[in-house]
Image (cartoon, rainbow, N blue to C red):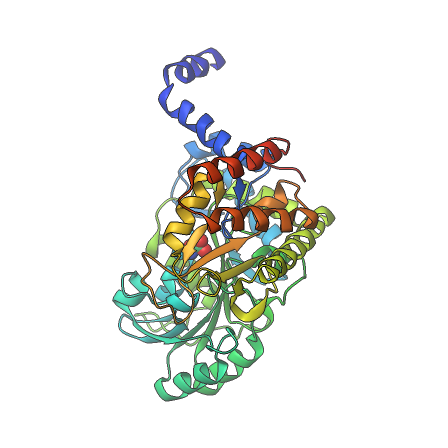
Length: 434
Ligand code: DSN
């Protein structure tokens, strides 16, 4: 059997060569994309296991296929560890991604055309929170709130105003490019006032929340969704959680007139509502990552992520860059390039940095004068470089290198010089150094 596996591996050169190339790219560069991270060997092993061979539509104990005894246990372990991590009452670990988790919540809580309220995408929100090109904006009536231009923080007054005027059925907190803590209690108050469901998408700060460094949204939200691969440092995937204060049963009735518990509605919305067979190999890897997240070492890691981000944001500001909201509470920051380099677009900046093996992404800043394809901003995050073992003493060095590139983004000589320095340092670090 083993010999057969080796023969198959030897035949497949093209893809394994590409995987080797990608590994090399990851090892030699500085990874600053705020939503990326490097997983442990055991998370990788679980993902690359024979569990990928198994069909398991349904849930543990209630499957549509035979032979699910083992994957039932795997999924149970994942669920129990996730509940423990966030003090949740109920969880679903099957969503293939954060967007799928969000889709299941829409399906469980809303009818097509219903109103909901989320953070404007160009102010840091997420595609699946109401973008007109996403299912959320196409099938439902999306309303939005912004951040304030003066503070760069969520405009809670505006959120309340829109909520009271429009009475959406669902209010979403959470973002892709927002570096501040949320006032979940305030949003819950207005949700209660208008009878809306309050959902938090904690995908970005999930790891910091698990470590107790940011507030646990389960204390305030009816429903919480997340990805598992950002600060949480697990495999690519999604999850849904319900907290202890959730009023069950929720008052939605089935066509047969039964009142269903929200947990049952969400389970059905994931499968069979929006997904087929779960990815049990990924669920196993999620379980491994949740186990890692329950350790003291994970807390230390998250402390370091947060410290690195604070030092990096300060280093940018010391060099004359504008950080939206003037700093960060979490792992990320949004740089408005216009203050220092008014003519430099995020698009050009991203390309020059990537050429120097510093990976980041262009991002719109709130009230941006440029389009989403050009942008005036760059988003940076510290989860991945922290997993590589970089501490706060390296953050000013990284900012210095970024500035060297951005001062002269067309100069190949300059970019080559920076790239050599990046490679020299990063080749000394493991991908997963914790
Ligand atoms: N919006 C992506 C990000 O934050 O990079 C995740 O969906």
